[in-house]
Amino acid sequence: MIINSKALIKPKPYLIVLTQTHVQVGIVGKPNAGKSTFFAASTLIDVKIAPYPFTTIEPNVGVGYVTIPCVCRDLGVKDNPRNSICMDGTRLIPVELIDVAGLVPGAWQGRGLGNQFLDHLRRAPVLIHVVDASGGTDEEGRIVKPGTHDPLLDVKFLENEVDMWMLQIVKKEWDKVVRQVEYSKQKIEDVLYSMLSGLGITRAIIEEALTQLSLINKQPHLWGEEAIMGLVKYIRSIGKPMVIAANKADIPEAEDNIKRMINELKGYRVIPTSADAELALRRAANKGLIKYIPGDQDFTIVGNLMPEQVKALERIRSIMRKWGGTGVVKALNTAVFDVLGMIAVYPVADEKRLTDTEGRVLPDVYLLPRNATVLDLASAIHSDIAKRAMFAVDALSGRRIGLNERLQHRSIVRIVTTR
Ligand SMILES: Nc1nc2c(ncn2[C@@H]2O[C@H](COP(=O)(O)OP(=O)(O)OP(=O)(O)O)[C@@H](O)[C@H]2O)c(=O)[nH]1
Ligand SMILES: [Mg+2]
Image 1 (spheres, rainbow, N blue to C red):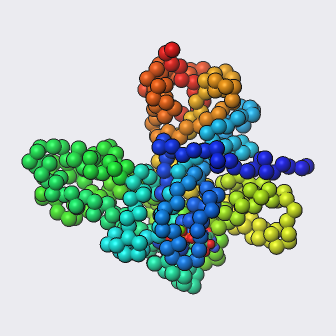
Image 2 (cartoon, rainbow, N blue to C red):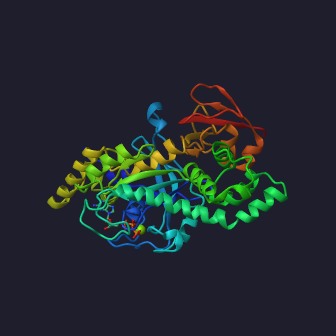
Image 3 (cartoon, rainbow, N blue to C red):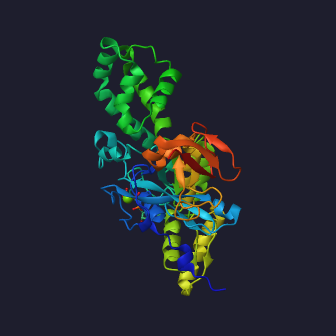
């Protein structure tokens, strides 16, 4: 069978334009862990990748993709995607990835490149921490013999850096917090919210933290350093949760470390990844040499390859067998769907034909926050639709869904509006 692999496989990133509504995923970690490789593999944007620390200075921003099984398969229809991509029944939904410079211990005090660039992560509600699981780089990213550095140490240090970054912001303004709460009689949650909303922290998170830590009624001048730090840590852990990408899983020394990370890092989601393998696969797929759908556990060779290319690809295949794929898309999916709990919804204009007004079948998929309602979907599409929305109709059941009812993951809905 001859497969036109290019037509099947080649992503079309030029079709996707990032907007403010795209969910952001920040990629963080110490230098040389593989952040830019992870970014390049996810976005296919050529960025600087090198085996020395601080290769990245300015953040790279690009379009990566999370995936869902596309409903086109369940329904047996051929779709015409517009805001996303469908490859053999896998829908690739764009997200914005931000690859920042490497963090070293003490970055919050200005070491290395400092932590100024953490400011680029303000809008990111979730972070992927790329760790060199092979233990082949020290805490500052310098190359050492694989297996000599303990990657578990990197997890704690990085969290601490992000905590200290947030703490600095809060401490700088603490006198003002005291004045506003104790003299101007403003609510502590309002004051903290106006300070932290710029970091992407919601009011609900602040309220939860204050309640859980029994700080809600305590006068801020009595808090002390420890209570402020406790609050910051709590807010960061829910406001900027992290998925651990245990990277360089292709290096033999990574295996034991990954097992330890999974066992010992309770409460964390640890995904073994080989960003290098994913990058090689995407490049080979783009050249039409293999058929590979991002996130799949295997690929098929379809082009004419040199023996050494086959050998390299077979090596990648054995890594994928061991870990169930390269893990890159899995890490992104875990961040967006499991940690953030986002849902994907297909809006259509005609629920019988599943089309938009121009006859395209299942053209768009929207990523929406957990618990999103019909009104949230309408607002995500257009403020005018939100103003005129009356209710929605579920395309499969024909059921009417109220404006404030929650939407289901992978549902197809038509929003009914006034004229
Ligand atoms: N074996 C292996 N090497 C990898 C993997 N991912 C990245 N590398 C290598 O690790 C080195 C550093 O990769 P980068 O992607 O530049 O690392 P970074 O974290 O962006 O580094 P900075 O920008 O300096 O902070 C390069 O030599 C990559 O080829 C992987 O999954 N496996
Ligand atoms: Mg980099």
